[in-house]
Length: 183
Image 1 (cartoon, one colour):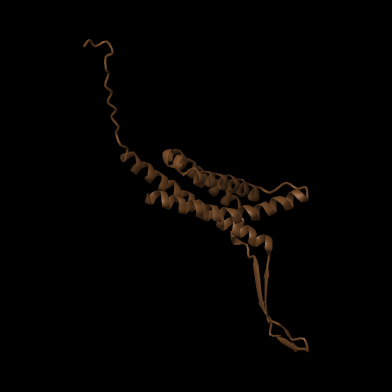
Image 2 (cartoon, rainbow, N blue to C red; image 1 turned 90 degrees about the vertical axis):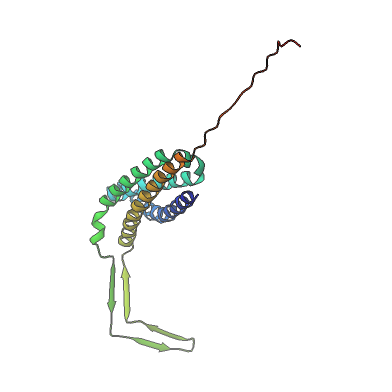
């Protein structure tokens, strides 16, 4: 009971973290395709793994009973996804050292009061490189999903171990009545 609830919680968390990853990486795949260029491996590997993992996570959540019955197989596939996410994160490893933001502070500050209201400019300026930030977020979500799929794999192994001990033995007794009995 508790194992099933924990499994469902972690699967839901995986789905929630896979959706933004899919969206961000799909943006890159679309941009490269629109320019008629090949999508780089560091985007493509994590994108394909994320698509397959999201489909797998949704399937196992909707089919909880069969997931519980074949816990060893589902655990094996989850461990395969751990390896695939490690490969995707490894391909995207160079984004970890990139600086995606630039914060600057000016000493100038201006404030203008008009008939229509007050307007001004702030001395602080934050510049974010959108593509870099999206790749870095995908990198972080890939690491998180590595951990999440490892957790669900071990939860499934635990569920299978405890489920094996809970099996009931059913004994069926049959009685035959002879039809050629004489009275």
